[in-house]
Image (spheres, rainbow, N blue to C red):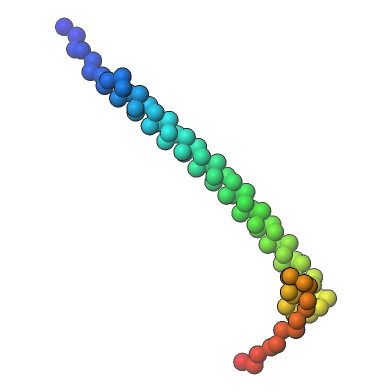
Length: 82
């Protein structure tokens, strides 16, 4: 005589299947978020490099100064004695 296969109820199976779908969906969203994060970090690195290049160019023209980004005003940096 063959053994009867035990099964969970249809409702239990549906619950597990739905939960697994939710987990898979969340993992896919996390993966997408990581891709976006990586792209943003690359963009930030690129902008930071441009900022540094621009700062070097401005320093060559104006020397070591502070620039007020709200109005472009240049202020000399006071050097402190050590």
